[in-house]
Length: 230
Length: 333
Image 1: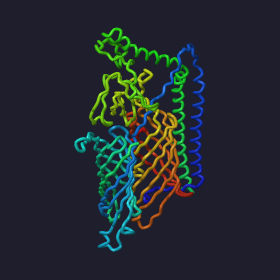
Image 2: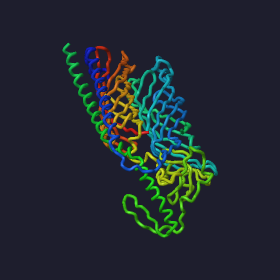
Image 3: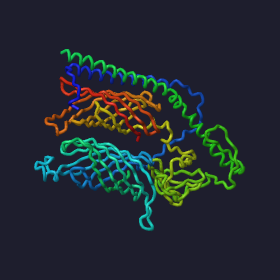
């Protein structure tokens, strides 16, 4: 990006002038807001009430129920990096069920990558240390499909659903940060209204230029987790 | 110096123009809001009349039951979507709703909402979703307690102690203890204006490089909102993270297609790839101006496109300007 960026030489005065313009616009907008509010205040008093009905006002309360559309969860499993080995992975999720079909979910995960295999033929290695921490986060949209009940033994039936999920985020290791697409499929098994078990297969796709050539890499992850609804 | 002057002359008019558009859009939005406020205000000044009307309709709704007791052969049934009422033969065995008392097993403290079933029956699913089996039905006249909500599903408990999940659509016509029809709220399309918090994500181009961004916005009023955005640009040679907080005006927020404009400030951080020989991180303040439009797919989901101009104040002597266009999806909580 730096190579392509257009730069401008602007004196400090111009920057201040821009800031001042923006601030003035804000003030104007707020003033307009205030005056509009002041204008509609007298409108409320102009209508005269001719008939005063002798009906007692009923105290109507909008019903409020507890809800559990949010989900928080922990997961653990394995993360297979295309070039740098497979390691254990763990992380946390925060989700929200928008409808019975769609949900959104933010994930933060940690794993490790190692350049051990490269060090056998390339003594200096690729990373500064042999093992580097891999961090990723993403925001994904999921769709539930094949809902139904699964039977555990003869007497237990529990609700379950499959889901497909995809989204965008970022992966970072060895001081590099890669924009990452993810997509995958998973299953949820609801043990109760407030707790579910999850299994998830997710591919993380990002472009890497650590090995001399810029190329897209596939990094599948297998995890099991538990989710709580609140 | 000439370069500096041209930079100044280029930057200022654009900012002025954007600020002008913003102020105009905002003033327009407020004028519209003021117009809309007049009927609301007059409606509010005659609340007793509205209550009287609703009581009248409630007693009218209660009448068919008593009429059915007196003359059990014919009941007036309003046809949805038309002003006519059609006489149809009433069933021979009628359960007169108000005579069924609330059973003790459904009473569960002040916080539990109790309603009476008015549909011929409602179906209880084992879990909140249309794919889960129906295991029980509650008949007309039964009292049920509502315990929990998950998306558009409500967990109810019947007098017999059965617990299951019912759709909002089936609870829509139930009667509350007051004898009035229950309002399950946020089902009407109009209610989306009452929703305040919006979350969304978009994808697009930032200076010809791929950008993703997430935004969370809070509606201060019908036409004004505050929005925080986190963006990430992954270029071939460097990566940029930016965040900004905007004040946004949406003059036609009650329309399905609704344009908006905003301005804001934030931070811009550019980290070149470590694989480059020399790299220097840029961390600078930024200001931004944005115009865009929303299109409501449903009452909760929107498509959004926007175009933004970012100015990063890299140093006292230098600023960088970037344009970005993104498209994305957002929803109201």
